[in-house]
Length: 93
Image 1 (tube, rainbow, N blue to C red):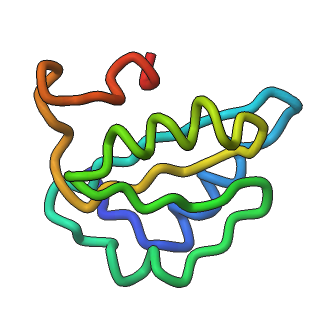
Image 2: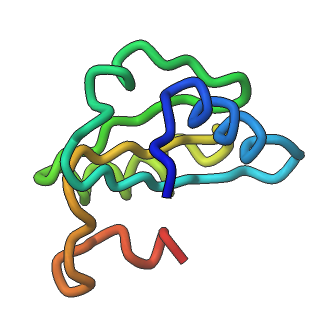
């Protein structure tokens, strides 16, 4: 697979966040390759939310109770946790 650059990724993400339905897109960046780039990313129709390995429950509360209308790219600079350890698994579905 060809390596993607940040511009290509942003273009694809902006396309993903079109439409009237709220979308939550999870990106588990296994090796944190894009963590520096993501600090400066601004999407057209979504906000970037930085997930930390130890704030899954707070993130779930935020996304499902506090801000239920905004589109989000949930960026995690680590591998996706096992289902048993992932409090956001049902949100991913």
